Image 1: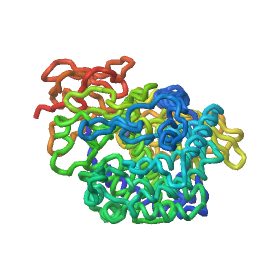
Image 2: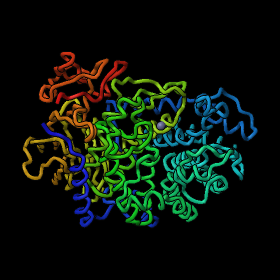
Image 3: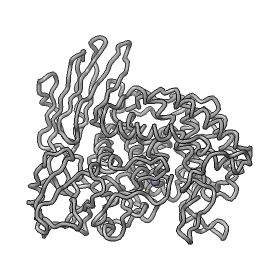
Image 4: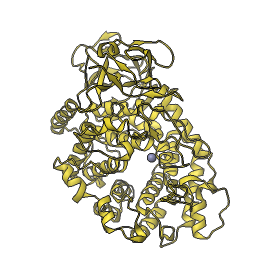
Length: 618
Ligand SMILES: [Zn+2]
């Protein structure tokens, strides 16, 4: 039995990060080097360099791309045209997206935040265009950006008496800079600057915590959930892509230093009671402050904040933030949440934020443990989310309650319909990363990556059924033999004896769980790397206050009990679970309470009820 210890994770990350800061290598910058202070040791590939092959990640990318490519332009633009007094044909979008209907008293979220996710849909399409080069997608982006620009006046009057101006501006900002960057839209950057100059009239003078917003609230501004503290990430990126210092000044102005990043950088856990997703998303603003300004304080804040997230707020699935909030550590809040809420993890948004921060930290530290964390969220949360439906019906919360069920969210076009298409496109840039001396294989999924080095054209092709099989094969092709290093992630749980073979010969040195194994070679077409990762069953306790509440974990997968009532097991009997050898990745374990219980990964669960955590008889 191996019991995951989150403190071990943190110490390992700290150690590896400390060592590698000294060994930082020159980077392949993925942005204009004059506009950033830090070249991260690992760089991103272009979206088009990576191809996902048949599998659940490719399916989610295709579903999201098709969903938004086929969503009617007039419907998407309608609320902006209505406010501008322009002809506004097309049906209402419905749900959160419409102009009117919201009432906190009636708990009615129709018209909650008009047009809030338009920018995310444009961003998702722009990244999908970057992947596919699909001309219809590019044309749609051009129409949407032009159509939005026609509704924007110099004072952005859309935002007069608007509930959450920073929230919606941040998404519009992202959509417009992505339309410029990835779809080369000719209007997007100009519209972005016009919008940004106008939105300032609706924003406070600095990033406000929710407590500060509450203290300033009066009758007309009683709504205190705006997210000014997430703005800097996109403002820094806008600076990098436009070169305009105006954005740099704004980005610095909205860093929430006083109440968030300063205490985090000093190791004070200020997460409790904050809104979960937006405060994880804010870590990415700290990372952009590090990359753009070279601010070590902000790197420390992001690293420490992520450690606190892992240590004190995370379920075995990698998800966090029941009821969208961080809890107080040390009082058993995660275990308690299982009987208090079905809103355990805000899945598409949370996974999007989690992918971003782990990708940033991986690029800076080269620590494989961030990859381990990313894949845990991938397989146990987002790949189990249902696809967005044509009418905007969306998957929102993962339910870890006793017992839980997958359900649709009650309101159409929520926040999670905006982050899902962005995240699914980002699968491409999360799977492989580049270093000055080679390629990092971060996620195991059927895929290929292409690059050139000094005139040599190179490609890796990955074949695997992982995580439902423990074998991964990577084939190399090269226009001529070429010396470089393949770094392949060996997950920390892959104990005791991970196998790595190069051209059928076993690699015996430095194959350690919790590392990137470095395979330096003069690679040529036909060479292949094979991995066989041990995937031991282990139990992970939900929190120290509930030592008998455990999740059964195999490799990166949490195995959930398919049941109408939470079962009880003997510890050893649960660890003797056997694979059912069916196509759902089921396992079978014998419980004390109800005999044989099927244990199933979240991504294979449909309508059946399940317990994420089970009781252990003490
Ligand atoms: Zn959401």
